[in-house]
Image (cartoon, rainbow, N blue to C red; front, top):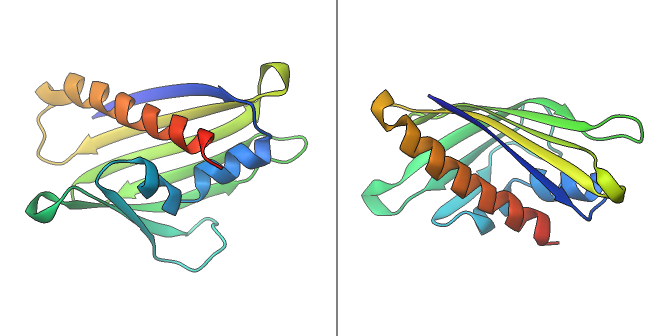
Length: 146
């Protein structure tokens, strides 16, 4: 099991950063070899379920996630979304937080605990490095694309 945290600032409003990070289908546009399917009707809320299918052919797997906390940002409060990962291969959770940042920018904090079934703890350093890189690039791309 690995845990990591990413922080970014973006020249976006809280609402716009939140939208870009929590429109789940957009994640499939920025993560290589991944397609995201939302299984519950909109709007997103606690209980929303979606699946990220990653890989290709016989090497693909589903990362099933459920939104367990959904608190969009308001004028007075930061936004926080928590996802529980409940797939056959990938387990853990992720939190996406948006809050006011320096100079009118939005500060994004992405926290994640990740476990891959059958992957020995010996592989945790490699998993942590790869996850930080993949999720860091995804967050950067999501924040850049309207």
